Image 1 (cartoon, helix red, strand yellow):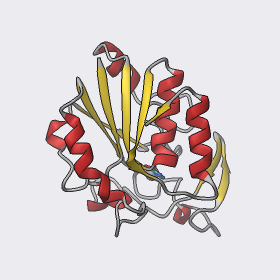
Image 2 (tube, rainbow, N blue to C red):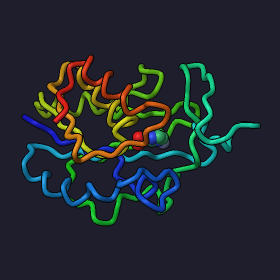
Image 3 (cartoon, rainbow, N blue to C red):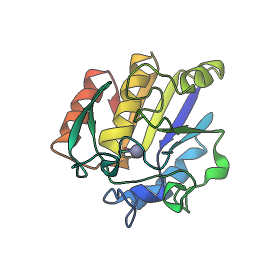
Image 4 (cartoon, rainbow, N blue to C red):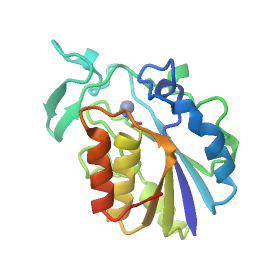
Amino acid sequence: MHALLVIDVQNDFCPDGALAVAGGSEIVAGINALMGKFDAVVLTQDWHPAGHSSFASSHADAAPYDLIEMPYGTQVLWPEHCIQGTSGAAFHPVLETDRADLIVRKGFNPAIDSYSAFFENDHKTPTGLEGYLRTRGITQVTLVGLALDFCVNYSAVDAAQLGFEVTVDTGLCRAIDLDGSGAAAQKAMTAAGVTLS
Ligand code: VGL
Ligand code: ZN
């Protein structure tokens, strides 16, 4: 059984969004077209409370894209984005959300960011997605969405480490590309045994 994981195709990651990823909206039609080819479709939604610890605005003397040390490791500080219930946190209007079997929200813990669809950034706290996929008999996952070098990358690496057979369809992803993060992500995914197509 093979699931499509659609990562964070939300307004704030699309052009004019708070954390816009270049070309973010170009991938939506292609993702819709892919949905019917899978046994299961899962969407993830970045879903932060106001004042989330990953926002630069939550820290004195910090600017977006600064790095800080958190108890769980180094964290990039982001512009405020995907705040629960806002239009920026909503899915891109063209994304066929009715076709999703499951929507996983992540990043709702104020103290920990969550790039991965499987674990928060402490790499320990599960989102529950692993159990969902296993109990549905899923052994293969294909990932698409935003952003290739952050949430897609972390989700793909975790999925591979959990033993799923993982493909990332890079043509249906777009990257933020911060300080070489694109190249680093490619390396991390390849090292974890993820197939990039
Ligand atoms: C993401 C940065 C912050 C992503 C989410 O979806 O890649 N990136 N929150
Ligand atoms: Zn976020």
